[in-house]
Length: 259
Image 1 (cartoon, rainbow, N blue to C red):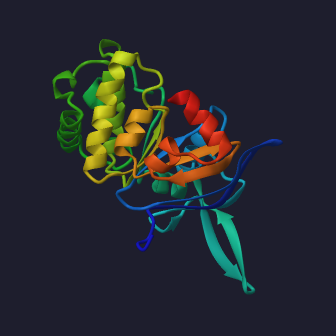
Image 2 (spheres, rainbow, N blue to C red):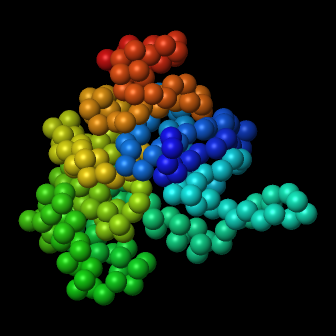
């Protein structure tokens, strides 16, 4: 990778008590790449996303997004490097550059679709409401929901709610989008509409890290596929290498069952 990575994860560990969830993760994602994380439940995929987005504090290692050290400030004292935890306000500023879409849509039930999309730009960026509404309508149109702008979440299907959630994340003009199993809570017939929006995002050049079990999506869209198990990266390569021609026994077993 000749250019600076958009995401550079170095030796990341994460403990929950005695549970070693991430056991030394190294991963790089270039600007404009789509990286798909796959693996069995409990392998650390979602935890890794939450560490990138500073929703979880790493136990050791470093995470850089676009060259910026996340959650920490490095100071050289007496010839050695010392790391200090950033203030909550500084972490929030870093996090505002990253969009995240979860399994559950987490929309505000008392706000319409357009109001959900407007909320963060108005509250965080102090964007004037007329400008925020115009921007929100643009993002809803991008995900094919401009005609549902004034509907409340309860009036929308699961797929539509998830597309509103994607529009909400895009409203902050993120440099990086993280997707944590965005289709796992959807009925099968609704999965395609969400994956379609994600395909268009990928085609537009958005840097994306996606945790998913959708093998077809990974084979079609991913620049590289990372297979995780037991908190470590077992394989990292193209979809053809990682999914269709795995060499590690654990990956062979997993994809043999999935395919």
